Amino acid sequence: MIRIEFSQAEIAQLEQERWQHPDPRIQRRLHALYFKALDTPHQEIMRLVTVSAKSLRTFFRLYQQGGIDGLKTLHYPQPVSALAAHQQSIEAEFRQRPAKSIKEAVQRIKAKTGVERSRFQVSRFLKQIGVKRLQVGQIPAKADVEQQEAFLKKS
Image (cartoon, rainbow, N blue to C red; front, side, top):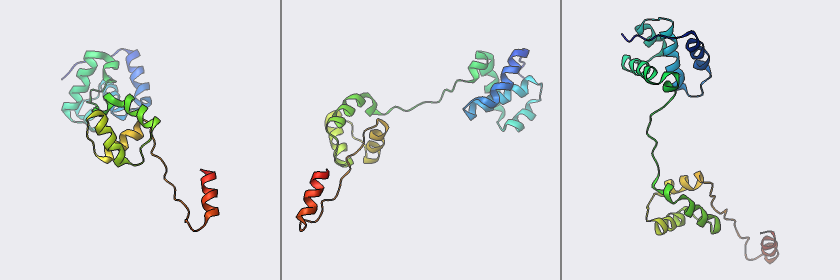
């Protein structure tokens, strides 16, 4: 059994932050520590917070090492795209000369950076950096010259 001593200020901080923190994973950790501060048995804490014994011990060790701030840190790996290193140059090029299609964007990115990605990945990357595709409109039928002239004046 892990023994942890809590001050009244820490208990009050746990009580307040366990409901107000925006991340539900951190809230769960704070709930577990709050129940520990109230001398609730570990089996009951695991049932109330719905965590395993290993997770509960991890929460307690995080608290022992870094206090309440140690509980609030998440150590999950965040993948980084290979295109992120070329983001500024890609963004500048596509703002200057937008791609007509995602297929064209894939080809241009491959030629510029040497990084080959699927159409879906390129589409998501361009959307993420705020670059939009050109909207393609339909040209009116060639039989009606007046409609064509009106269309050209409008665009």
